[in-house]
Image (tube, rainbow, N blue to C red; front, side):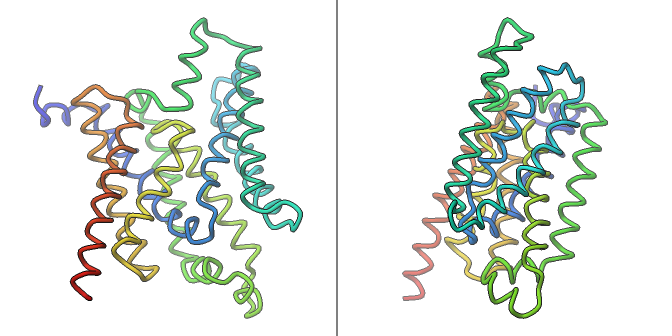
Amino acid sequence: MTLLEYFQKDYVINATVVGILIALCSALLGVTLVLKRFSFIGDGLSHVAFGAIAIAAALKITSDFLVVLPVTVVCAVLLLRTGQNAKIKGDAAIAMISVGTLAVGYLIMNLFAKSANLSGDVCATLFGSFSILTLTDTEVWLCAVLSVLVVAVFLLFYHKIFAVTFDEDFAAATGNRAKVYNLILAVTIAVVIVVAMNLVGSLLISALVIFPALSAMRVFKSFRDVTVCSVILSVTCAALGIVLSIVCGTPVGATIVSVDIAGFFLFSAAGIVLRRVKA
C-alpha cells in the first residue's frame, strides 16, 4: 500500500489530526515550562493521569476521561501550590507526586485487573499503543475542542505568561496576578497531558513538551521566535512520526519521540554552525 493510499483511510487522517493538535499544544506550553525549570511537570501529571485511569478501571467507569481530567487538573493545582512552598521545592513536589501516583495506579491495576494481560495493559498505558489509530469521531472532536481552548488561552494571556515565565516576582510587583496566571497555566498543562495520553502514553509525554523547546533554543534566542520554531518543529515531528509508525508498524509514541530526538541533534548541529559563522 502506498503512502497516498494510507492517507485515504479515515483512521490515519484522525490519528494525524489529533497528533498534530497535541504536538501544537505541547510545544506552546513547553517553552514556558522549560524556562521556569518545570520541564518534568508533564511527567508528574502524566503519572497522575495513569493513577486516575487505574481508579476509573477499578470503579468500572466506561468513560475514564470523566475521571482522568478533573483528577489531573486538581493535582496540577496542588503541584503548583506545593512547588511554591519553601519546605517542598518544585522538583521535589513533582517527584513525590509522580512516584506516588504511579505506584498507587499500578497497585490498583493489580488489585482490580479486568484483563488477563495486565502487563500489556500497563505497557500500553505507559508507553502508548496503537489506540490513536482507533480513535472515534467523538474523540477527535473532543481533542480538537480542547486544543482550540488551549491555543486560545495561550494567545489571550500571551503577555502575562511571558511576564510570569521570566520574572514572577517582578510580574507580581507590577500588578500582574502571577498566582492566577500560574493557575491557568497549570490547568492548561493538565488538559494537554490528558489529551496526549492516547498518543504517546504517560511516560513519553514529557518528550513532546521538552524536545521541541530545547531544539528551538539551540538556534533562536527570543521567546517569540523559540515558541514559533518549537511549534513548527513539534508539528512536523509528530506528523512524520505518525507516518513512519504506520508505514513501519512501530509504536506511535516511541516513533514520534525518536523523530523529536533526531530533530534536537539536527538543531544542535545547526546552532553550532551558526555560532561559528557569526564568530
